[in-house]
Length: 633
Ligand code: WTA
Image 1 (cartoon, rainbow, N blue to C red):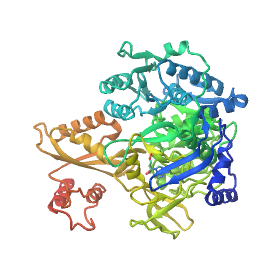
Image 2: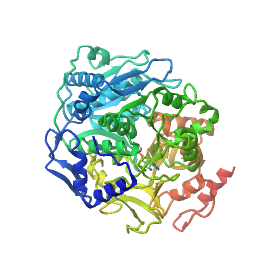
Image 3: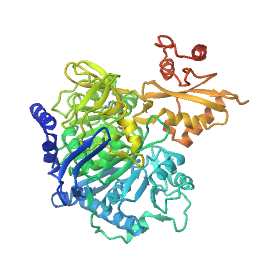
């Protein structure tokens, strides 16, 4: 088990060590795992190339570190507790031994269908236990999983399958989400029309709804599992071989296939999980994220299971059947650590106090927040009403690309301060750069958040596009990893994340590229161009504001056109990317070189109609006046 920091002086000591002797520090953590062969060299790195390698020539399998390492002591302990969407349906509990058997069985199924080490397997599943089983079965045989969030459209799914060249797709007939049923197989079928690489589709039965089946390509999960053996030897992986790909949005249209490796990711997620949440043996931990995003990968599946934790996985939504659902789950399983997003907190806060009254939340010891800045009001509500004023809130800052938590309080060790992610974890060396790339050394400053030294959990490349990896993270400031976030540091050295400074917006904790949304809007034959920006939204953190230029207004008028834009965005990306506000404009404000002046559009979306800063490069200032006039009308 990885070492655990339990005192403020322990933190200082470990942090110092991790900076003065990172090799010794990480060797010490990595030595707690089971390796077929210990690494020969701990780290090689060059942020200019860029190239990063950890635990070089080490050989391991991450699932042996989840199962074989724990079975003797924890075989009968629950690994995953699955809480279904409908509270009337019984929960499912998988002990480490039971989960191990299922993973081995499905690994054998994968092999029987021709999946080998290095092949890509796309997973488009709702929050059901089969999702965890599939991910770990892939890892068992060295296949690379690529989980696609079940809220994505057919088009988005196809794009991700094709980019990864996936040979297989694992999906379900459908999924339950609150009162809704999502048609996963139907969407998969639509996606697969344009995916040549997929040879086999395995379908989990969840809703029992009618679906179409393609003979020879499609197989029911249950039929294949029936006869599968419970023993499957783990493939020995090199530390640097990929474990998974997870797509995320960047500032250009195409999603980025972030690649995480077997060794470094394992060491980093386990270390950060144990320390940030102060997990102790026997605790029950509940992360309410969706496994379709990185938080679920690292902190429902890998981090907790690597540390032998009991991890609660919830299929539904926080407001179904009532806005008490999270609190009921916490009471039902006596959850000790609870991890969710500010959007969920704000939306539950907005439902009113009555939903948290008379619920027993005494088991809680630690509360976590992730994915977006948490505002002061939400922080206090979470602290006072859920944590009863006694549970530290760990406001964890990190990204799909960082693999695990980077800046966060260590629960009960680092004093918290509302809206501050506080201090870097050991092994993380943040710096703040001004726009010219100078390091701002003073304590109290604001600027671009960069990281100056590698950490084991960092993404190594973007699938099939190393050059884009360089462009996205290592070009803006040479020699540094650039996060895309703005940050402020106070007198105590505490970090407060201010949000994205690139063309990425964060809607309900979902990362969306404005270019992706614009491309979807522009597909409409009557639209010549559009510009999308974020604006402050009381629940979602950021809302989506689209300025749209039409070639011709259809006879049916604005409302109809708005509806068809929303439909197109849902179809091309996902309902989560639908604009909250659409404004039709005659033209977009542009510079002489043709660049859209988003700064101005952002201000207008925020409701500010003056002080636009330098507008001397604007070709036609009346465009801005027209837009403002449009808003006021
Ligand atoms: C934002 C999610 C403020 C940030 C784990 C980052 C946060 C992006 C926080 C990554 C936080 C994440 N406070 N902002 N505690 N955590 N972010 O890749 O802008 O989905 O760059 O990873 O979310 O989003 P991603």
